[in-house]
Image (cartoon, rainbow, N blue to C red):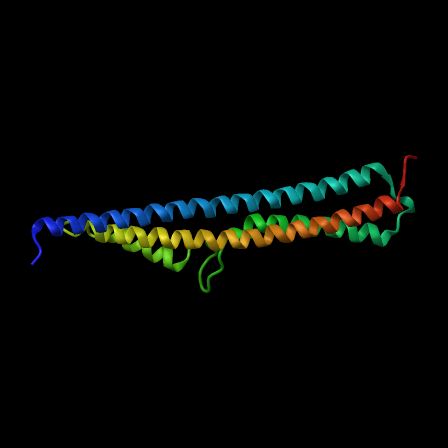
Length: 180
């Protein structure tokens, strides 16, 4: 038979474990949010670089002798890089769910939030509230992790397109007539 002191120690131990797990989920969420921020920065840098390369090349060159196909392809890639960069920042954070509007919140997170907010805490075990909070933070961290992966993929695509833009602009410089 357990004594009241042993029950109290067990309760505190469980509460400490739940609090530790909640804290760890907060830290994971911060890591995933930082990854999303880095991916947004990379996408913005790719957009800025692509537009700047196109502008500088056109400003510096007399493109009358330039192959028109190279010119068209180059600026098509500038536009594509811009589009992918915007997609990285906008679509990367949104999850697509059937039958619902676009959102960054999964059904699991929405359900966990609803359970926590609607839980009647009067006269109940505080550890149950901690468990509900842990469920919510775990699902939020999962959502943030998935969004970070999506944004990183889009940003990598923008970076790859930027490399193509750089190659195309190099061809324009080589084929253009500068210094007139």
